Image (cartoon, rainbow, N blue to C red):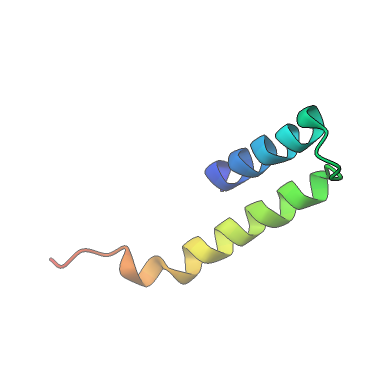
Length: 51
């Protein structure tokens, strides 16, 4: 979750600093972090290694 939120915050900060005619929003960071968590949970089956 931290990696997803950090990457999203980096993109939003770049949009703000570089003035790319895009709106920076904290909501985008929160939704992207939640999506990273859901993707991690959905892929949990493939994390396991054969014992």
